[in-house]
Amino acid sequence: MRLENKGKVKSVMSDDDDFEVTVYSTPFCAPCDALKRYLTANGIPFTNKDLMMDAAAAALIEGENIRSSPVLGFDGKFYAGKALERENLTKIFDF
Image (cartoon, rainbow, N blue to C red; front, side, top):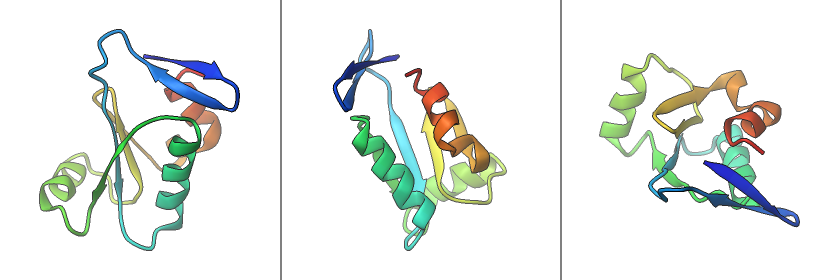
């Protein structure tokens, strides 16, 4: 996947258009909201899964030994904590 710069908003371009970006979040979580704002501002479509309401999502993240939110699921990998800092997100999404 690569991102194509179109002014201030970048649009996600994929050869197979089958990529999925998932944010695993919890209510009243400022870092969760910041991650969702970042993705939206950069034109990256995502699905949000509430870890308090979605038992399957919570079990998946727990199974990855991740105990914090938000968690970003992309390209078969999970990112949390410092991996979600802005400079690291830029590397994850290759722009």
